[in-house]
Length: 327
Length: 275
Image (cartoon, one colour):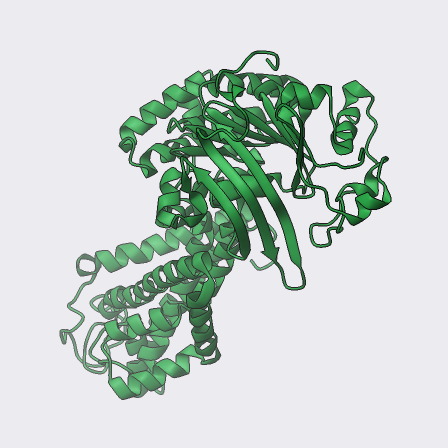
């Protein structure tokens, strides 16, 4: 899939026909004692129909980015920069406008399918709720449409599945139900946050196949820590570390010639490439170093790396890297 | 739930039903009009007056059966009001938080320091309320604890993943509160309803025993009051005093046991050793 040419993503990252353009996004959480810098200078552009994978380890800010796009961050958050969706800055919209976009234009496939469904409401009713709460269909029609959608998502007896409660179905089924929920209002863009977390290999393969098939004509931002998921779903990839994008480019550029030491480490820690973990742990978002945030774990770090914070710089084509260790 | 617990629940529900049937069909079940003077004063129990007559010659059994109506209405009426207030206020304050929540919580703190029964006594003395006003006052003033309980549950549910999921599909706040949070707090709301109806029922009997409203109203509290004030106790007329008392104990016990059973079912960590 990675080798196939993609029509719309051929233009460069600064293209003007972006569906979603995140510029210089900074997210801070104020806690009692400290400031948590969850995201720093994040720039992401997604053209219509383009699929971007955002990869990085736990705590690097991937989910915060998804929440920021959908306006789901808690009240004690300070947000800087812009998130433009069809040239409209989502951060400047009121709650009511954002609510009309959520689910209808940009749908989220949330993390942890086990907890994201209401335990006391049937799966079908929760999916149908997307259609009814946006007044797309009346309740009866929404029920029929949802049943049809569940059938399409590979549920053998969609009528029966509709009436199941979340605890009565398996993890793979819940994930598929969440995909159905995201698709039900026919959104332009889908943000999938760890869509295959906690699934075994066979189920994951099936869910990924289904997701790839159903998002072919849509814009997709997939958030994952798993390279398999990333390469199955997307053409472009952005690697995040400690709240920053450290490397971005096409799937081939990043996976075949990784330029950032963190990406290299991430790749070689994959079981198929030798299972060599990166030593150390990532810095706390409340006490980030002044210099390169990866310097403490980097095998190639120099004195200047620890002092000066590197900027994201273009190497060739669309390939961008936040590393100056070669200079 | 153990077998005995289930059995106790069934018996309690049966008792509750019995009281409800008596309340609804009181006119069909009573031999006399409870207000009418149907015999000579202070008759002993006989075939005509199974529980005798009171000091004005009214039939005590008829009064007992009719009294079920007012007594239950006060208890359940206050409980319904109390639960509606505590659920809605608890939902809104717990979900939105912020300044409104802070203000409501502080007001509740103040009200919770004032004991309800003496407060009602004072209010009753000053305003001479009808039993309906009294029932409303009981329900409204007694809802503070319920608000606290519901609010604390909502606080944690509002942070849960499925609420965020509902927000992510674009559901409105009202929809999230009614469709997603409310069903999750229903168990405690039901338990709260059962335990507070018992609480208010006994409180209502207590208030009417003290004669805080119209004494021509027929309810168990008034009956006990009359038995005391008209010398029924001094004369040893147990058939006058005991039946209303036993009736109160019976329904109070049934409601308490139903409440315990529900509580234990919804929260298995509650101990099993309280009958």
